[in-house]
Image 1 (cartoon, rainbow, N blue to C red):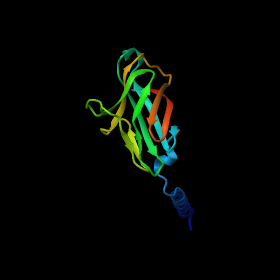
Image 2: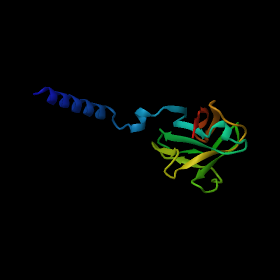
Image 3: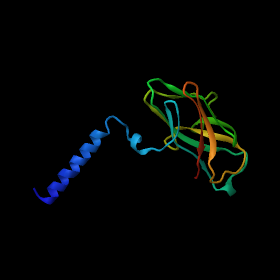
Image 4: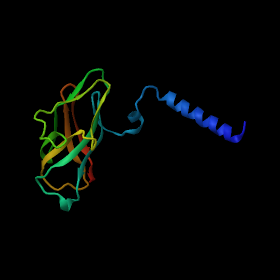
Length: 158
C-alpha cells in the first residue's frame, strides 16, 4: 500500500471512529457553549445586539438572542424574561407586534432557536434604561417547571 493510500485509510478510519463515538449526540452537543442551565433546560449563545453607544437612545429597544435546549422527556415552557436594564422583555415574531403572552415551548429532547435571521421569533428588550456598552447585562429567564436562571448576557456590536 502506498503512503497516500495509508493516509486515506487512516483519515477514513479516524472519521468513522469519530462519527461512531459521537453516538446520537446532535452537532450542537460538541460545539455550543452553554451560557446557563436550570433543570433540564440549557441556554446557549445568549447575547444582546446593540449599535455603538453613541447611536443608542435610552428608552429604545434592542434584540436579545438565545437558543434553548430541553434535555428532559417532558416539554418545557419559557413563560417570562426580564432584565433590570429594560422596562420589559417581549417575544417578537418578525415585524409583528409583540406576542401578548410569552409561551415558548421547547419539545422533549428538542431545541428552539430565538436567534437572528431566518424569520425566527426573537426576544426584545423594550425601554432600555441606558446606553449599553461592552459590559454584560443580567437577564432572567423563567421556566415554570424547571425554575428561574439569571445570565449575564454579553452585548455584541451589530
